[in-house]
Every structure is written in structure tokens, then in C-alpha cells.
Length: 336
Image (cartoon, rainbow, N blue to C red; front, top):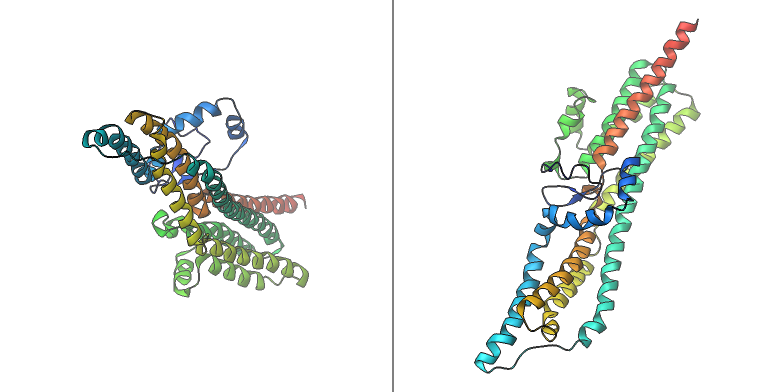
């Protein structure tokens, strides 16, 4: 992830960006919500356009196409056509007024469909966090401290491994991130198994639970949480491997870029110079293209969601649960 300037570090908008230019959210706290809802949000919303260069990089090609049309059409109509004695080129406004509503609905539906995927992914990770917390609590049922400690370490590694499983390998050094939770022998066994790393961890956790000799009711509750985590892995893999139908994404992009490139043929009737058409085209194209771009980027939610923070929270809180249980045991032993 590219290094951010100090002016962006405290901004609660999507200011942290990856090398690919994808915006990356972070979990909100009370301070972030206060800033997000303050009156200064209007100024930050405008100034971030100039500070977040990745947005312009993603829109460079379509904006260039639109602005090239906005430059060439008035240049031809107002300068070259009269000079060469050719007819001017223009389109009636009815074409755009009749199709603008359809284009808007298409963009809204495309963006909403992507947001549904984003929201589902966040709910899945919320369930992962809650079940890891519950499993950490249930680990206290194990009498063997080694098995209890092993369970906590496996849970701590699970969030990290699931995060790495859902992102491109170039973004994370998975082995380095789990080194403090898994032994070298466990890492080697995980690599040799051929299983997805998070699934291997859950299978290992299941075997650890089986060897703890819990009573049937407690064992059933633990295995239910493990089964739900396995289901969450499958849900995440489904979102990752199944995008919104490609034909729908293509027709949205095709309709939008065609509409924007033809728009100067109408704007040239209202403006007599190149600058007027250029500015109008830039204003309209920039916001339309950015709306479509948002839909594409949140469609694959795991690159945008704050999975680093969630995985770190799983590791920290499961460890804290173990420490709390150990403290309670020590206090109970000291009271006798």
C-alpha cells in the first residue's frame, strides 16, 4: 500500500488507497463518526478530489475519451467546418433527455447491486468475529492448558489466514503474519495439506476439541461454531468467485461511455467555444464515471473492507479472553 501524506492520515473518508488505486475503508470509532458528521464534511468532500490522485488515475482513460470528443466536436463545428465549407455536426437534446433517466437508473442499480455484495461480506466478517469470540470463551471449558492455549492460537491465526485467502498473495506475507500464532511444524503441515489455510486451521481446532474430552453438550456447541465458520469461508469464496454478471457490467459501461462521448454533439449547440463544451463535459463525465467506478470497486469487497483491523481484533481479543481466564484461575487458586 502506498505511503499516505500526513494530511490524509486523519481523514475518515476513503483516503487510504492500495497500489491499484482501490479505496480502502477503515473501521469507524466515536471520533471518526464525529468528524464524518461534522459540517467540515462538505469541504473535505470537495478537496479530496484533488488530494486523492488514485481516483483520477482510474478515470484517466474514459475521461480522456470524453474530453477528446468535447475538444474535437466544437473545434470542427466552429472552426474547421466553416473554413472547409462542410456541414456542422450536432444532435438534438431529445436523445439525451429521453435516455438520461434510463442511464441514471442503470447506474443506480449497478451500484446498489455492488453494495449488496459489500454489505453481505461485512456481515459475514461480523459473524466470523462473533464466533471467534464465542470459541475463545468456550476454550475455557478445556481442562488441559496446552489444548486451551493451542485453541486460542489457532483462532488468532484463523482471521489472518482467511483475510490472506481472500486477497491477492502479493498484498500479504501470510507466513510472516501467522508466525507468532503457528509453529514452523504447523505451517509446514498446513502447506502440505493442500487445503485452504483457514479451513486447515478449523480442522486442527476440531481435532483439538475432540481430544479435550468435553461433555456432549459442550462439544456440540463448539463444533456448531466451527461448522458456521466453515460456512463463512464458503460464503466469502462465493462472493470472490462470482461477480455481477459480466454482460450487465459491460452494457452499463458501454451505455455510459457512448452517452458521454456523444454529449458534446448536443453541448456544441449551446456553447460557441471549445472551453465551454470542455468544462461542461468534464463536470458531467467526471461524476458519472466516478459513480460507475464505485460500483466496480465495491463489487469485490474484500479489497475494500478493513480486514486487517478485523483480523487483528480477533487475535487480540481471543488472547485477552485467555488471559482473563488464566487470571481467574490464579485468583481462585490463591483464595484456597
